[in-house]
Length: 435
Image (cartoon, rainbow, N blue to C red; front, side, top):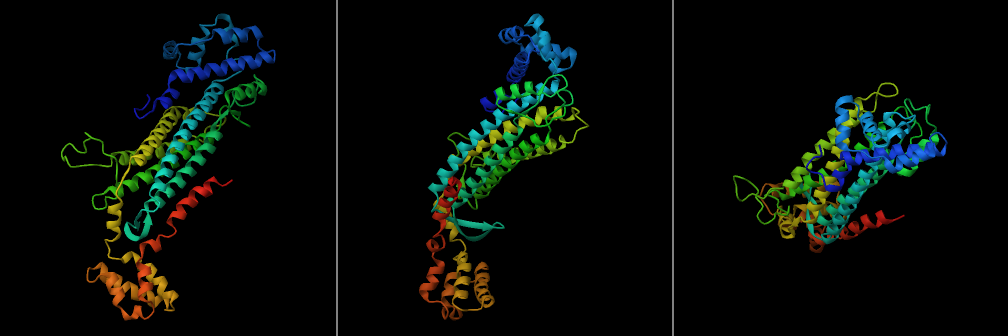
């Protein structure tokens, strides 16, 4: 079953019709390769190419009787070609077809995901440049720390998603590997030239070595790339959820006209896309565990991996594709409130300048531990609401004897503390484009 999250291109990729089309192409290419080697009559290979076809309904009907998908497929195709059916699947085993077709499908799925990631990266970059000089509170442990910019936060996300794209591209290449080496990988009944011919025309490469199957560490690596991608998207979505909290409200998911947030509370505007992305990331990570369990199999193969892969590979690529699309939508339409960001920056009455003060006092010659004590004393009183931090610092002779009024103003100047923010955003993209 194709999950309802699927976009049309990815859904079509995992439909039965597409799978059997690839199976048929593998069988026909193998016949053509064997015809070139004078193993199969050339006229038979030509007739098979012209006449061979299938019906999904017929395949399913045969499988209900024989309980073997490849035999059912060969039976249904054989009914369309008459006596030439004896040349189909010559010297091959089921996994030759199954694993080679899976490589083709995963390669195509990977490309769809990479295309989606290119769109996501474009949106992240556009919005990072849009907000590169918009100040906001940086938080560590959930507590106000120092000022940053929203653009720098977006640039950091862009850089991480770019790494996820690179990892996925590598993993997709690693899983685009076919095999037609026979029952235990020895080419006992079909020469290596057949495998080379088929894989080249399918746009994949032959496995350097295989047993009856392509080794499943390749598929686990692909699932690991998807799990990391899903996790990075969750990281972004989780931050959006935090920043949308009523007490913070620095950003907000787009809320469409007519949209409803709660069946009980008409005022609610909930971060439903971000929450959905966080939930789906758990599913993709869970599928990685199954992929890792599929790596160790009995001897040259068993089929304990097969049943699980029929779920985790379509589901994971479909969910990852959906997550990329929804994350792109989330950031593209994200409502940002710069005024609220500035309001939150001032919430602690200048406390965010504490490190600037510490550094300035140390540079002025005061012992660092003494400087820390002086600044922290005022900061703790300000946290408790006893004093205004800025006013207390400006009035303390133990501080003013080391720093002039102008030097103190510099410590509290937001623009001074964020003077490198724009250049940092630009550096992210410049370094990524460097050869």
